[in-house]
Image (cartoon, rainbow, N blue to C red; front, side):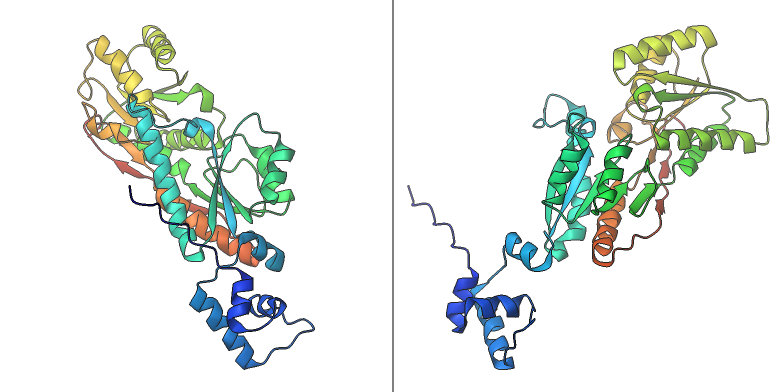
Length: 357
C-alpha cells in the first residue's frame, strides 16, 4: 500500500516574516494595510507582498476577524421541513428531489460568494432553537445571514436585524426592515395560474391550499392573485371554493373526497403548493374522472415529478437558483455598504402541460 501523502503545512505569518526578513509585526501591518503609528518603505512592502505570494500565504479566519472585524463567512439558514437532516433516502423519490432542490439553492449562493472566497455555513433552523442563543451563535461566526423561505420566523429574523447582522431573505418576508429581500411575485403567479384555467374554459373552480401553510404570506398573496383573475374575467357565471388539505397524503385524500361528496366535481383546480396535485389526481382517477377531459389542473412550485406524471402537470416554475444567487450577491453588497436595496421581485413562469394544455 502506498504511503498516504502528508497534509501540506499551512503557511503562517511567521513564515512570511522569515522569507521577507522582517518582523512579524511588520508583516501583519503591511498585509492588513494598517499603518497607524507605523511606517514602512515601499521596498519593504514589496518584499513582504512578494514573500506572501511566493509562499501562498492565506490569512486564517481568526486573523482576518481580529484585523478587520469580519468573519468572511455567511450563514445559510433554511427550515428543516424543506430538507430533512437525514442522508438521501434513495427509496423515496420525493426525498431525492428535496435534496436536489436544495443543491440548486446552494449552487446559486456559491456562485455569488465564490469570487469573494467566503465560507458558507449551513444552519438548519430547527424549531427547538432558542432565538436569543441562535442569533448569538451566528454573531460569533458570520457577517451576514441568508434565510430561505422563512415562513413564520418573524421573531428570529427581527432579532438578527436588531443584532446588527446583515440579513437577506429569499421568499416572502414576515417582517419589514432594513434587509435584502428577493421574493417571487406571488400575486402575479396566482393570477397566472387561475387565468390559465379560465382561458381554458373552467367555470366551477377550486383552490386547494396546504393546511400547514395556509397562514404564509406567499400563500395568501397567491390566493388574492387568483381571486383578482376571477374578478377581472369578463364572464361572471363562475363558482369558486377554497379547501385546505393537510400535507400528509392519506388525510389529504380523505378530506378532498369529503369535499367532492358535498360540493361536486369542479372543472378547474388550482393547487397552492406541495404534492396536492398527486393526491387530487389519485382521488379523481378512483372516481373514474379524466384529466384534462373532465377537469383541468394547475399546480404550484413544480418539481420534476410534474413532467413525468401521466398526465404531465401544468405548473408555476420559480427561478429558485437565480433568486438565491441574487440574494447572496446583494447580501455581500449590504455587508460592505450597510445599505440594503428595496425588495427585488421575480416572476414565476407558467409551464403548460397535459393537465391544463
